[in-house]
Amino acid sequence: MSAKVRVESDGVRRLVTLARPEARNALDGEMLAALVEAFEQPPRGAERVAVLRAEGPAFCAGVDLKARLQEEAPLVGPSPVEAALHAVEGFPLPVVAIVAGDAIAGGCELALHCDFVVASTRASFGMSLAQIGLAPTWFLAKKLLEVAGPVAAREILLLGDPVPATQMHVWGMISRVSPPHRLEADSRAIVDRLAANAPLSLRAMKALLVRQMAFRDDLPHQDVDRLVDQARASEDAREGMAARLEKRPPSFRGR
Figure 1 (cartoon, one colour):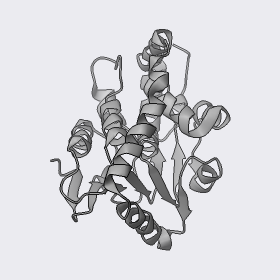
Figure 2 (figure 1 turned 90 degrees about the vertical axis):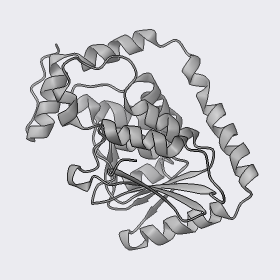
Figure 3 (figure 1 turned 90 degrees about the horizontal axis):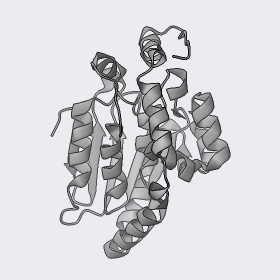
Figure 4 (figure 1 turned 120 degrees about the horizontal axis):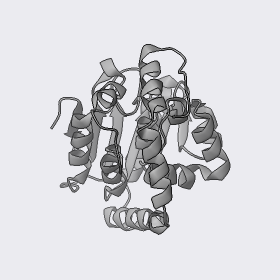
């Protein structure tokens, strides 16, 4: 297991912690592989619930842009983050995300693929891809539409601005918002309540919920995939990522 993703268990809870606070828990290849490993391992013994949390002021800043810019060829096909999100969503028991700080792009998706999201009132969520010349894959956009509905999904994707946790709660996209000093206690109350329920019932209901949400996977979307790959391979994408890292406005040229 990676030092950047800690996995512990107290018997009832599987605790998965993003532990790269110096990089705002940006997801590199090592972390993505560790997340897959952490959530593909079946529940052991008395485990009833998984908890996903993060060290430092940010929950997760998304995919590591420095690593992406160093890649020689543009990314084509499924995003590397998708395997990790599939593993989180498909974990047989409920997964609770505790979001104390910002969850951006892949970090936003990571939280939303959990069954419950309890966020601090200081946290923000966002999909800033349009602001750096990228676009989400079919799988990533599908999750936003499932959780947010068409109106909020358009605001989140097309504008790309961060959305306060309080607004995410109003839109019904996250379960709870708590003042920072109450976040751990409120999260623990949900975790303890889940752990008290019948484990076979939880497994059956989790499988039902995941299966019901999978129907959009079969819709034809090859043309959308081509547009996403075109954006990823564009000059604008490299300019947008570089500008974000250098903290300057990007200069997009539509090519």
